[in-house]
Image 1 (cartoon, one colour):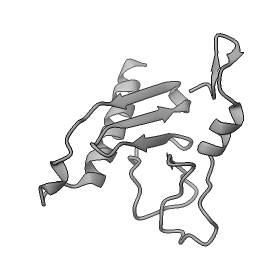
Image 2 (cartoon, one colour):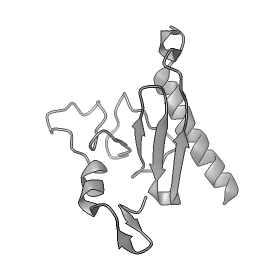
Image 3 (cartoon, rainbow, N blue to C red):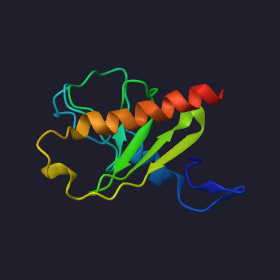
Image 4 (cartoon, helix red, strand yellow):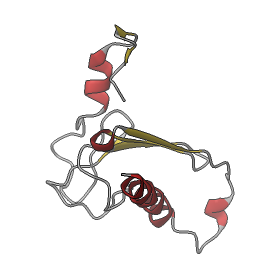
Length: 119
């Protein structure tokens, strides 16, 4: 959340976070496809893409990383918030009716909804 800064000390290099949370995708990637930092999905409202795992309610500048079993770490700088979803289901994807994109977008949208309710 604070780019490696903790208690006034830089624990990890700030540059790692800057690179991870800015678009690193090649310019040749079609506009309709999502853009990434280093393994992080980035919310960029300037470019609409058909396939984006970040929910519509998440503000620009949010970013998220996903695990193979469905877990997620979502960072929302606008709200100074980090949300972690611990979800361990390697077999969810065997269900033909399961929509991974809708599921992970719903997670992000619910986080934003709850943050707004608390304000």
